[in-house]
Image 1 (cartoon, rainbow, N blue to C red):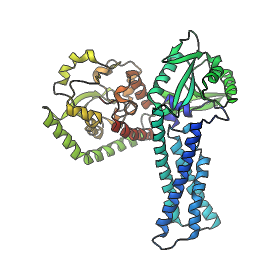
Image 2 (tube, rainbow, N blue to C red):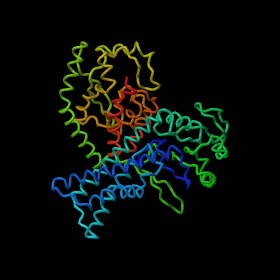
Image 3 (tube, one colour):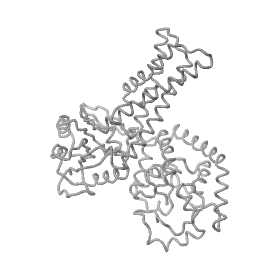
Image 4 (spheres, one colour):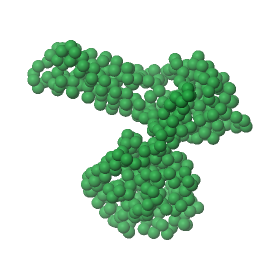
Length: 487
């Protein structure tokens, strides 16, 4: 996951400098205790289930396997601890926690197999095949549910880490806004230390408490448990080392968010050159076998979706025709990969003459960029408002995916009038196919400022991976069900 991080996630995981003896807050201890009890419960459940499945049919109930079932939770706790699944840095955000649970499951399965072979214990394969995969999957589900509960508590302002941010005022303001929108990161900025004068008194409601040399005192005054250094060239080398040594005495976490995290996260590696740890940036992989796999996956899913959703598609089309005069489908020219024009298909959500009425509504535009957005657009029909809320108007775009104009995941398909006004760096969005969903949709949809939407699209282009696509598709379901930012 580290390669597909936002800056807030980087503050959790990409800790270039970490203190030892990290301070553990009371809520963190409580959360870890709950997770541990949940892991034990999963171990017992999987052990009992495997015992019943393997031996109930045969009518045999060997006592040795009852003992193994009782020992399974302890073995599972040991495997999780060795894989780092209880690391507090991964609580509540990122996929590292889940990846470590998977690693624990694989390693425990291998260890049981090797131990059985070495000792000739003859553990029933049917028991192992049921117990360990069930345990791993069950634990992943339980930890996911615990994470969602933690996110709800963080949305109410509890279970938060107190953060002092250091850097330049503009970058600090961006981070503060991002953390307020995305409360699931569990970080509250309590004070800021600005790199150089003139220093404002307040940045977006957060007090500026001093400069870089004042960080230890600011941490003490505000009872912070984390210091975040944001892409600050003044805080490097011996200055950063000295700060780490100072914070180590109080167990305060020190996190450094690299300047390249948004544009080259998974493509960066540290390589020693002439005794210096240089950050090497690989070129993005925008062609080749991985993209063929992505294309094959896209078209397979599109075919399955169109066949499975055919009754729903027909019902929506009929509802549109019955409630408002005009065609059920809306066709519009959009810009695809490499600037190629194509026709996008959507269910019509506005009155038939919507485009002719657009000029009269320009003064009501709520977007701060090239997009035209009105929260309560008078052109949207009653049926269209419901379709937009749950993104059902996007379903015909599976046709675009099937014929190769779009992908399941990618940047938002832009209008020609938008691309004509793109600056050079924004045109980078056209290096890949546009998508039905993307980082923009799972991060706020229409509520996002234009610059933030562009940043997310560019980050997707630079950091694409098949795993990232799967993560976005998974998160899209939640975003659609809640209907946040859809208008």
